[in-house]
Image (cartoon, rainbow over all chains, first blue to last red; front, top):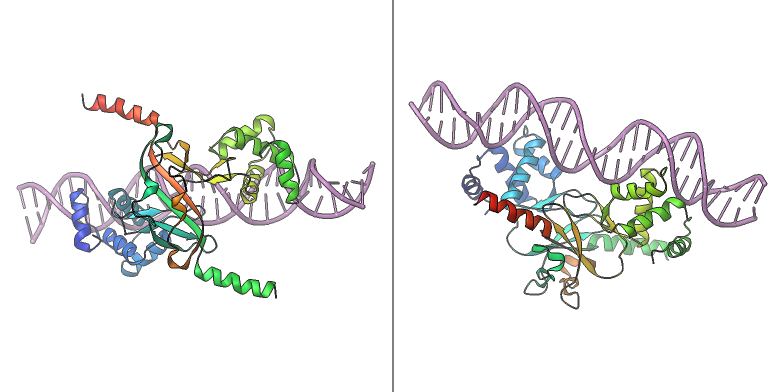
Length: 150
Length: 150
DNA sequence: GAACTTATCTTGACTCGTTCAAAATAAGCA
DNA sequence: TGCTTATTTTGAACGAGTCAAGATAAGTTC
């Protein structure tokens, strides 16, 4: 549901106007999964050089609110966005370079969602972030080890 | 391991000096679970009025690195700290007021930790954040509903 | 198709949590 | 007690994100 026609429907259903900046922002998010705001601004400006950063921030916030895109913000990193929504998937973050990848819930039935309803909170979502090291950084580390410990 | 004697051991083992600001910061974190930096600064200054905010930031970062405390930073909120470390517990965050509470992993064996080792990442930690509504805000919402929908 | 209304965009200033840098201080050692 | 240098203080700076006012253009009405 991230084609131009799709987004027009979503926006109209929510009584929002369909504008060039908005369509461009959504296309950019769909084309660059896990991109941060700056990357999205650059991508948008390739096609529409005069779009302001504010318009991008506004659009991203709006789309996030409408559930068309999803915001991810691991500790120590700026916000990232992705157009893959609706399924219960999580993310791995590389501690060294910040690279982000999708991870489908390993166990079939999303067990993480069932927390003991502690402290009287009513829980509606479980957000899981896996921390680790990406293949590239693993390789770089191995390389370094060779040099440091000959 | 958050007594003054305990922290002295940890610091000395890491060749770090035991200073008044550091001890004060750790006490503050232990006394105010889930407090943000500003709260910790205030707490520290109750006993040591001349401690700078920079010293608090440095100490928090140091303790986090040494694993004595843990930093939590839910989307849209500033960093919080807690002295409860070592066990695999997670957190609930109230979407409305930002209140934070501990949640022990509901299922016995921490199933969330076993992600499919996707994309070649080597995963070392799974961080789970539950999102929901705290009892106070639930009550406030119910109250509001009564007024809005009589 | 032209005029109108107002949501959206542009522009530019601003906030706030956090970090940087240099000089002053005090912890731990000799 | 004095020395060395890790920490702290002080004060400025950074950057992602937000706010506000006027300009623009999407969608509606005539």
